[in-house]
Length: 88
Image (cartoon, one colour):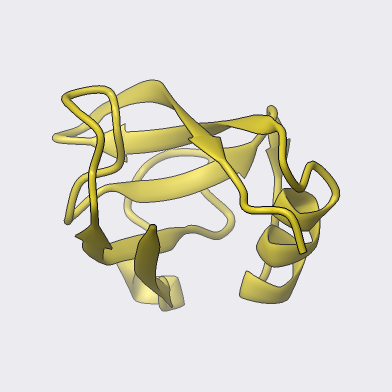
């Protein structure tokens, strides 16, 4: 499963209380409607907000092989998406 993510620039953070986010540019092998979609903005991992792509990667890697709940903004609404990170 592959993701292409880009950190949002400060002027792109238009949602209230969004200090940082990752824009989903491309998703390979999406698993259904509850999976990540191109255009989603990831704002937290297991309810923990992150400030950089490095922090996001660390939060996901801590749960390697286990599901994580990603809080995403999609079409102006918040929702959770489950993601299972591959073991390292």
